[in-house]
Image (tube, rainbow, N blue to C red; front, side):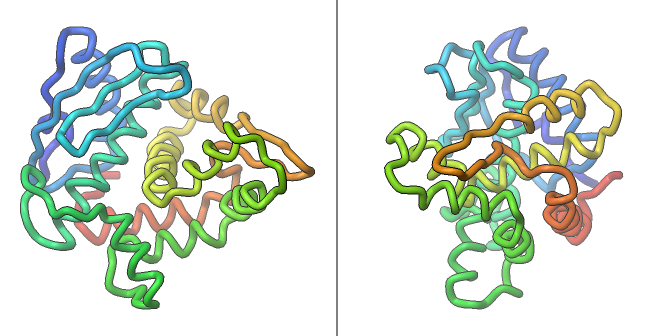
Length: 228
C-alpha cells in the first residue's frame, strides 16, 4: 500500500498545516510514495526572490511573501522526492535515512559515463536536455556580458535538481486541467527574460514539455506510485 506524502511532514503551526493540506491535495491525487520521511514544514519570511527552501536536514520552509505559496510547496515537494524517496528506491534504504546522493545527481553522473539505462531519471534527463526550454537557457547562459544577478539565476535554473523540481511542479499542474492550479502555473509560465537577443522562460512552454511530462509519468508508473 502506498504512503501519502503528507504523512512525511510535521507542520509548524495551523497556517503551515493549511498550506500543507492544500499542496498535498494536488500531489496525492496523482501519486503516492513508498515509506515515510520526517520533515518539518513551515511558512516564514525569506529573502525576496526565494519562494521556498528544501533542507536535507529534513526541513521545508515556504516564503510567506511568495507570489503563489501552493506552487512553491509543490516545487519543494519535488526536491523532497529527489532527495529522499526516488534515490531510496534506486539505491536502497529508507526515506527517513536516505542515501547521500539525490536521484537527479545519480542521473547526471550516469549521463556523463553514458550508462543511461541504469537510473530512474536518466530518460527524463535526456528529454530535458533536448527540450527547447533547456536549449534557450543554455543560449542565455552563454550570452556575453550577462548581468551578474541574471547569470546567477540562469545557472540555478540549469542545475539538474532545479530542472527536476520545476518539471515536477509543471507535471502536477498539467494533470489538473481547468483547475485554479493550472491557471496559476500558466501565469508563472509567462515569466521570461531577454538579453542579447536570447529569450528564456522560467518553465517549459506548451508542447515542448510533452516529452518530459511523459518521462515523469513513466517513472511513477514503473514504481507503481501512479494513481491517475
